Amino acid sequence: MFLSQIVQADGSRAVVARHDGQPARIVPGVASTRDLALAAIAAGRDLTAEVAARGAGNTVDLQAALDEGRVLLPLDHPDPAHLHLTGTGLTHLGSAATRNSMHAKADPETLTDSMKMFRMGIEGGKPAAGAVGVQPEWFYKGNGFNAVAPGAALASPGFALDAGEEPEVAGLYLVGPDGRPHRLGFAVGNEFSDHVTERGNYLWLAHSKLRPASYGPELRVGPLPDHVEGKSRILRNGAVIWEKPFLSGEANMSHSLANLEHHHFKYDLFRRPGDVHVHFFGTATLSFADGIRAEPGDVFQLDCPALGLPLSNPLDQQPGDAKPVTVAIL
Image 1 (tube, rainbow, N blue to C red):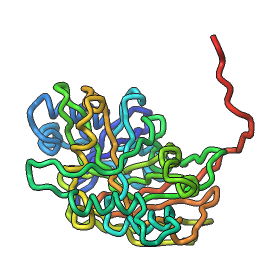
Image 2: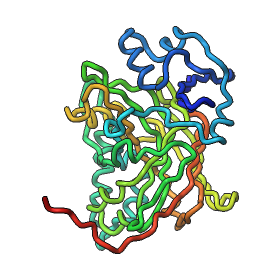
Image 3: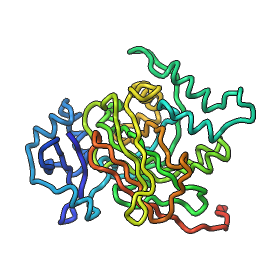
């Protein structure tokens, strides 16, 4: 089952459920995926059972809603400050090669910190059930104010040195009233980053990740397949200028999802009741690694059938400003 959120013709919000081979339908009696999940937690059942209990509403043409800009993020929060955008890197087999080339040291016999981190994941990222594995690289992308709806523009700030896509699987979570995280499902996500800044010094990774991100249009309910395939494209004036397949799922990862989830939610800060978390699990595919530089107006398109409809976002380059930000003194 797939879930999405739309704005209806009258301006009201609605949750839409879609099963493979069946038309998408409004989920009656609920206006947000978050509220649907809270109701499921309160009733002691999963999302599929909660949707089934509500019956089937009117049919929806999701593609038309996308074309009209009426599709929202599949999971959000009424207060964007309570939505956390985070991620983990060096989690996929092959992901270290690109990172290593960006951070290579003069001595080829000396492992870069990136390669050391990747090797740690290979050796200890998939612990036995009930055990805790090695912690991954972790980064913060911002809160809900940095979450961009499907079809909306990803804005690169004027001081950015690059504006590049990262096709990833994102886990979507809601923290229950008792502080326990609940995974609602997965969505394809564009973990938009500044790779030139990151290449300048790996300690600038934190700066390079503070960019908007998009995910959706749909949320896949249930487990993630062990092997996930998709295609990442960049379109310029309607024509594809770059395309490459990407892989995800645990069969293509150096860490288990459970291990990545543990090392995120082990912090009390991330177990605040009612908060929403969108966590990007990493990638091994970047147009930047192939020497591609996106231009304003280019469209990033991520097509991953296992996670629902394709995700598209145009690039918007914000104007530069050489003036420093000044802080007022009270």
